[in-house]
Image (tube, rainbow, N blue to C red; front, side):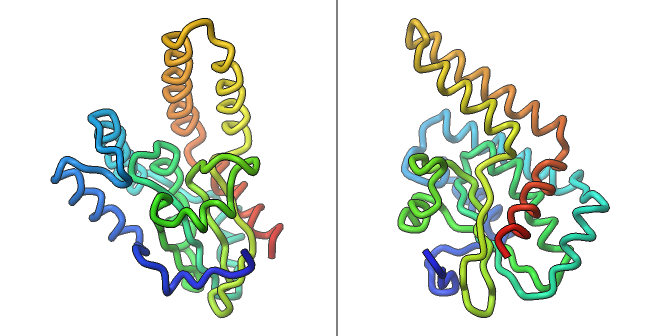
Length: 210
């Protein structure tokens, strides 16, 4: 995909509008997508709390701030997400803070399951619809400059190792336990990292593509 005319897409959100949409869905006992099970609602509620906390506590490193301020051409960062995604809740507030540091940057969000045609161009390892994925666009031409996601490299390696190990688990219960432990460890990783790896790797991906 050489360009994405994001202005013409249905369901494009600013970050505040995205948060408001999730709150409205939760009031109706729903989340984004088609699965409104108690588990998915629980994940969504956790993610709302995470985003609100990160909105207040996330700090940009001096290096990240200098790098993002040095961007001298208008760009649009288009993030593919869903409300129930734990990684998205940890990553999106950091991206929003980066974009807010430079008036030439615009951050917008779209839902994965409403835009599978775009999602399927940015599959992880060519097979997985993992999110979040942020696509860097030239605002004037809508040309795709690059992308980053779904999570920092170190964490991605840990998650993929768990996924491989789970395939050989002796029972479905053991497999489920491994997956749940991986989710807990993933959130602990984000808390410990404090958004530093997200900032660094995302900006490296952007600069590498421009």
